[in-house]
Length: 285
Ligand SMILES: CCCCCCCCC/C=C/C(=O)SCCNC(=O)CCNC(=O)[C@H](O)C(C)(C)COP(=O)(O)OP(=O)(O)OC[C@H]1O[C@@H](n2cnc3c(N)ncnc32)[C@H](O)[C@@H]1OP(=O)(O)O
Image (tube, rainbow, N blue to C red):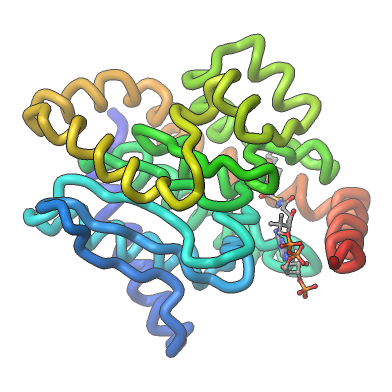
């Protein structure tokens, strides 16, 4: 049979602690605070300037999520950004450009870990999306139970991978399909659409759009509704709905890593990524 989620978490948590010691960073990339509501933690992403997923940031994020998962005082987490420029710019392109296969392998494994931890979390996860959220950055909202987006034209959200000349992995695609449906996903994924707030709400990639200064308070009031349901019933139900999707990754992790490493190592892919990164650097306002 398949190893269960608890096994993966335990094994990977150990790897993460070893990795965290290796980075030994003084910077705190993830800040966790209790909220005004009992049982609810606020997790702030703080990898300046845009919360791109560096290996170090992913590692810190996983460790913090694991701590919260095991801390009986918490039943829910609101995930938000502490970077003025973005909720998350997704995969840090410097981690997947110009590195070696061993690095790509490690990176992809850690990204899978984050996905599994979020997607199968027993806690209620609410994304308070207070900035742009691109590609891999959507991993957090798409694995959350509820998504609130700030009503600001800069707050674009979507899986724009194809615009970089790459393709979103199946475990980004599956939650999107589960949330917005097959036809809308075909459209969104192939065209690499980044939705502004009104369209994001219409297509269903977010559940609520509110003024930026109300994102946090709305997240707390939605959380209160979710916490009114007994945990055991909600957890059983969440697991029942999500397990088939999660099992696809658990079962095909190694093949997925191999596919990623060989894909990302291609010269043509490396060239497109470098061009995209160069364009980002030029587009400064
Ligand atoms: C088989 C399986 C197949 C699998 C095949 C492979 C699958 C991979 C899946 C995942 C893919 C991804 O997530 S790919 C990543 C996709 N991400 C994006 O497209 C978002 C790109 N970023 C943006 O659009 C913008 O930066 C945005 C977030 C809106 C903020 O705009 P602003 O104008 O406020 O700020 P900027 O000046 O652009 O950004 C600030 C600095 O951060 C840098 N920066 C921004 N995004 C970055 C990023 N993702 N990685 C690195 N660096 C980034 C900029 O270059 C700037 O650097 P300096 O100039 O030095 O200051």
